[in-house]
Image (cartoon, rainbow, N blue to C red; front, side, top):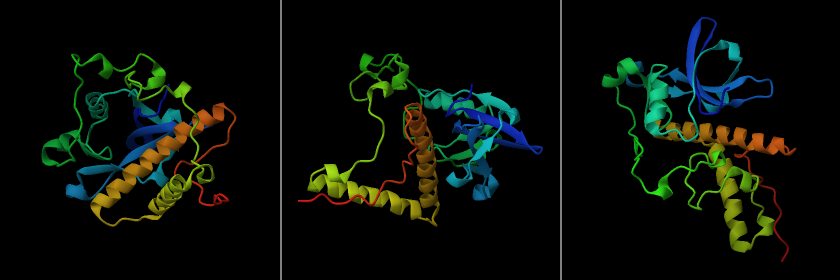
Length: 229
């Protein structure tokens, strides 16, 4: 019934909340990243709470549920958020109330707001649900044909490749420790952290169905030994 990406409103202790579903846990609770009012632009700006403050709620608290498919267009996403009273900014983390739209400056969206029905066949979404709306152009492969996510092992690469993997893994850990103080930095940090949490949930769901242990995509190993010459 509930899927990652869906928009919900829920009420707890007589307080109303709104957010995006990240996943469903083992107890069938809904993991949701909710919106929180900020002091920006005289309190008209709302943003997703920090990644470590996402909520797991029981379905009984949900008061409104809007489905948003994996292949939803920007127009469909905007429409879904409007149903719960919000306008999403182009950065994916900034919002304002519908009533405040005319008085609020939101980040611009850099993509195409609508789809073109007259586009070439190669741009049309695949009918295969495992393609999640991507075209059958050979660039993206279906989920059921790809290999499970795992961290690259520098011990299995040549010197140049191993160096790149180790530096990348270290950069991921350094990002986790990064605590920006400026507005733009905080927005980037929150956006990447939210996407990481979604990726972790999706990756774990696939691995668990195959009897594999969970894996945190933002915690690549740093203790791989160097290959012997």
